[in-house]
Length: 312
Length: 156
Image (cartoon, rainbow over all chains, first blue to last red; front, side, top):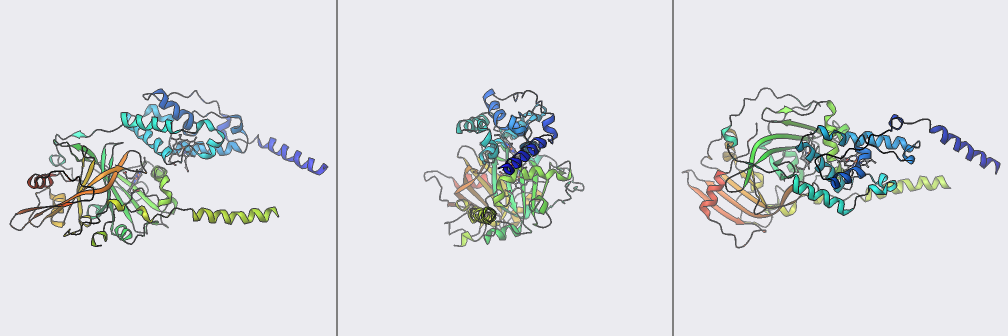
């Protein structure tokens, strides 16, 4: 009896002492009042504020139990990682297209059931989203943030192509692959969130993997190239690929790219193919958006059965 | 007693988690693949993709494919030469289940083939896809002209 009491006391003292060790985030926990996301209806902003701002903005509200060690370390790490992936505090400095992209990103995080983290909603039930909240976000985006195609004034053909100088490597060292236009199309997408139209090319290794049904994981040597063009409207109402926006690559090598989920990620933008990304680890951005597909080797596209099927 | 229970339950949980991994061979977009059209002389999906187009009214999306002769147009921007074979494959579009903001190919509505013979003679063939609207009228000459006119998707 006595011994048990001592042990309990010791544990209590330890817990109390542990409260002295806190992540710096708690010490500066005077969060500014959350500002409403400007330019979107109040009820849309409210949904995101209640469910997401604790981890995805500078406006964190710490509940008393969040401040207890060791819970506070978990919370602080959520905030660090959360803001790296998506930070609503930047809202005011963003132009409308980027704001819309952020909202589509957020909504897709919700739809993929990744967000808000279930460990968080378990103790913050008010942050759980109900279907009405989700519909509200969807209809807001569909009614206010669908990109319209440009009208065809001059076609891409009329514009003189600038002579390409040397194409620089991506900041993570990946070199440009000029050959992708000879590859097969494994799919195409219409993106109404950003007004583009896309072809997803697969290299011969990718096509062979599709033929043999060996696509999860994709074999080493697989390369995807995804090109995006601005949508352009023709006189008859149909839409064509207009101005070239960018080409993005995913290069599979489980060993070489083990630190980036087995893929090398790279993007080149515009007619002069400028490499995208400011730092070596710019690709965390790619990975965080592709993460909901982790059970599919981080690949969104469901490929067409390119060869074989017609012969049956 | 307790520790052995905890030690035992972990491998069990891991097994469960592995067992629950969804099987994903059905990641292939089978509905959109060109099954059931047996008379096609070539498999367009194995040709070079030249252009993509959308028809907002019909909610369809199409990809223009070409053989190696036709694909020269990507580089030189010239008209399709003799020996060119072009295919326009049209799909009904559907919402991408994995990305709100995207539409991807669903079932094939039509496959159209335009070829240019040695003498410059043009030939048009229409293949009905499984999702074809039965009473849709098509004029061969119109369609042929339209297909030859689709602006190719250029990239640097």
